[in-house]
Length: 84
Image 1 (spheres, rainbow, N blue to C red):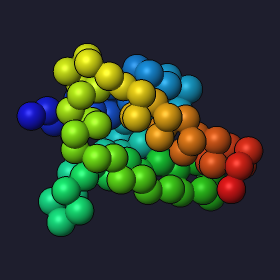
Image 2: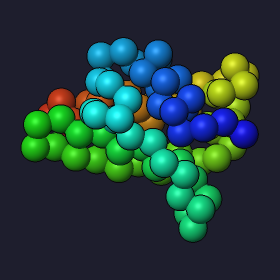
Image 3: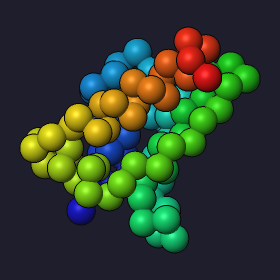
Image 4: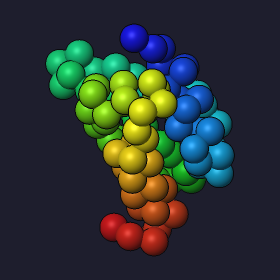
């Protein structure tokens, strides 16, 4: 298993323009949902997204980051106001 900080750093390494871990993007494990919660904020916009444990695990192992990348790209578009 990996830490919140490691997952956050992975997200920022894929999308360095989204922000800084702990400030613009926060990651937390939600045991009740059995998923990682990715929280992003910019100005007055704030979004939470649930990332499946299996998808996050595959990405962190270097096997596949497609689901993570697509999810984060969509979140970024939403925050930037390009899509609602």
